[in-house]
Length: 335
Image (cartoon, rainbow, N blue to C red; front, side, top):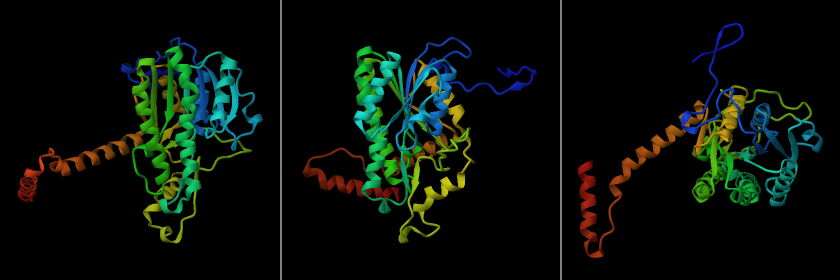
């Protein structure tokens, strides 16, 4: 059904999660939830903070200590507590949770939008680069879970919304360690989902594609067009302009503001996710995310079909020779 503006012109319908999720009703009353949003100063986190506040929720917006100043986190909104945190530090995360509980008395939804990546060939990234990505992306997520899960478990309710990436399902040249850290996050959350189901604690991995910024950055602390990624100069073996290792660098620099997916629209869907009754394990946002993951799954399926003839049962050693002959014969027949 079309929505119509005051002038009577037809407008696009509001993006809505499917009915199977039992999302909040359009323009209907919703229960006021308390959110902790880590990475609340990035363009995705900032949009999510604004979306939650616009719907009347209470929010603890958590900025990164080395990107924001304490004064930047003040006066955001009457219903918003602004804090700073380094997710690599367990105590820093614990402190945020304690302060949120002191202010609001409860926490219902924890969203982690924080992330860090280095763009460069695997060989060019040193131990510091790799550890920093894992400490931020994987250990940061684990610190957040360790700080909040005992509380969620005791109250028999809670929601995790963990921003992963299409890089958590793909091997992107120039983003090897970053992809590895996101793969780790995906495995962690999928295992957690099974472990906490009996406690009514739910988790969703949010995999955005190419998300553009819908609002300007702060004039005093503008972010580069590649956001939370650090571009490392390539070493000589990978410096050729056609090197696959430069793929990620070429991609982010070419994209600039061409990203097709709106951060504001993504944030609205994520807000609905926090309020729905039956959230999915994964929420892919944008056509790039859907198509790239679909291509990846197709590739894996085709590879399984190509090599499935090698999947035979283990047999006693006495029959091993005959079994090898059968496999060889089958392969010859297939050729």
